[in-house]
Length: 362
Image 1: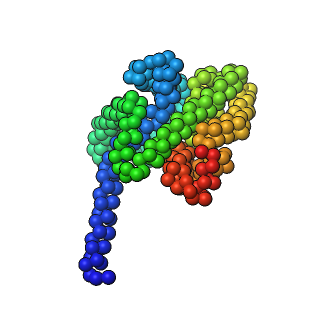
Image 2 (image 1 turned 180 degrees about the vertical axis):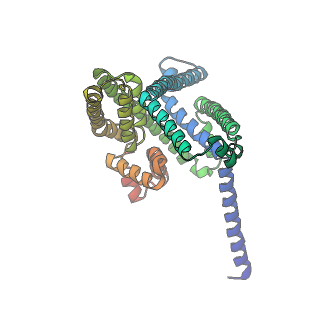
Image 3 (image 1 turned 60 degrees about the vertical axis):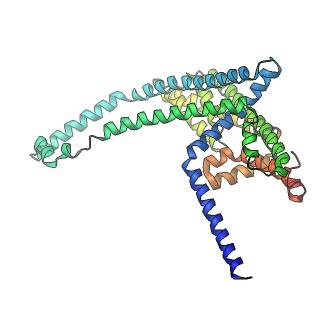
């Protein structure tokens, strides 16, 4: 091996490293755009069955079907927000009334003790504050900075929301837009496999997200009926919120259960604790336990195995591993990502013995 070949190899390796570094840096700089694309992709997968229903059953034009679907999804999102805001306001009011007389008494007692301490020690409070320069050292710019951060956050959220809706609209309108973008970077001899992979992944993920909707609906019905029976205020809103949180695998039920118990407790602050609140909390715990039994032994295994065509134990292990490696976000995206990898392996490595066993259900 002569020096020219070695030099060429080194230059090529350096070039590859530099190119990969530039690509990663570029992706890091546009990470917000990538997030918009991913969210829009999820929305398009959720809306895809609705568009197909409107086109095939109701004979809607493609554009009209997409517009109707987007309006429906935006309406659902707005409805969720409109349901949660009154609940949060009411719970805040309930908490603000919690032991208000005791709080007032504690403040008055603290003030009296402070004044007595200062008088005993012959301390002039006004002079002490001046000497400490407490007021002059305070950074009052934190107030406008805080307000500016709120306005900036609202502006960023608005831009992000509009961007996601705009991208999702065209993902739904032009079914092959995403596919054509990927095929641009695929060699000609791999286009057919890539097309089949994209179509299969889209179909499985659409079924998966629709399955999640039914999972939330089942929990919502159980929670609502149970909370209405025991007489909890805002039962529908509390049930929907806790059912929605259940989307987070394994941690979601725990978080949702704690939130439900807290909301039930704060909704009955004016009533006797041992006679009413504790009684309702006990029934609430039984409702949560019953709903989770139904969800864990019926809803989840059926939905996951039917929608993404994977064994429940396989799904369990993938979610646990993703959670250990990437936290809660990893647990949420584990199933869609794993399903996509399985489809790609089946299309491109179908002769491999391990791949055949792994993808036998697809």
